[in-house]
Image (cartoon, rainbow, N blue to C red):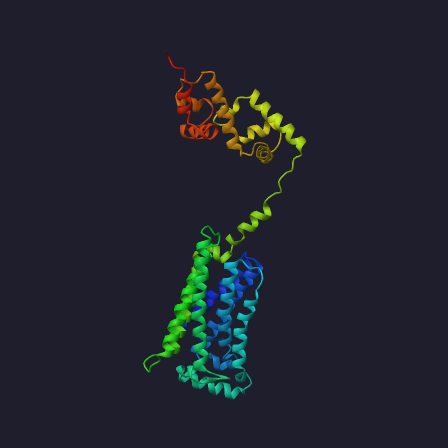
Length: 379
């Protein structure tokens, strides 16, 4: 059962790594971190698979390489979380300190690598026959117990820190485009924390009835499968498309056209002439395109010119022109007896509510109040 789970974990890890390598659209720095995180987990899972199946005897030099790689996985995960939370494009000083963890781990177990092949094979064979002895046999300059104690402790601490940073950042970025990635990383952090907490507990309270090494192997294999299956249900994580939306929008945004004062003066006269001689703006289907055709310029330029001249968007501008027509008709008493729905339809408003809102924005009172104040009283 364990062998099957481990093989599945390795296969899924390799598949995820391949997809991200060729298809993921993330910033280069964050993409490299993501790949290193997956690669370190894949390698660690592969080594555990070799150990549990006894194949490590064929490759004794690979023994103990899992320890610094696990520290690398923890360090890279922490750096990756920081890069997402702070939107970093390059490592900071603290990130270089985190990388010291796997380096120190490698130095601590370095003496093992200088041993003879016979020594390594005999040591590995003894551990395979007595699996839990891996936690107590010296590994270089450090005992196995303290080695795993350090790994589990660092995993717990990093898991808690990651959960705190991610939740805090997610609350500040309620509309974050990479929300799904935050949720995934929170799940990974929780699993990291719980897995290492169980591992630490089993190590401290070890008993003859508990196969600690097998338990930790199961936990790690399940951890791998869960965190790498989730992205298949959230392609935004797997392909990283949402993380580039903001940048794409920034890159594709065209520069605004600049108009001289003379140009604006000419357009201002043309626009005012249009509303003097034309009445099409009083129809509900009047669009920005109609005005752009009259001025013989693009809709984008029309929008920009109206903003520059009137400090309003197109809809606000048209609604104001329509309300001006209503006020003119009211002053002449032509429409004072019309219903509000009738007045709204006459000037192109599609609803009574929109008309009342636009009228109040222009005059600070409602049409009903205006009519009441201006309707001649019959003696």
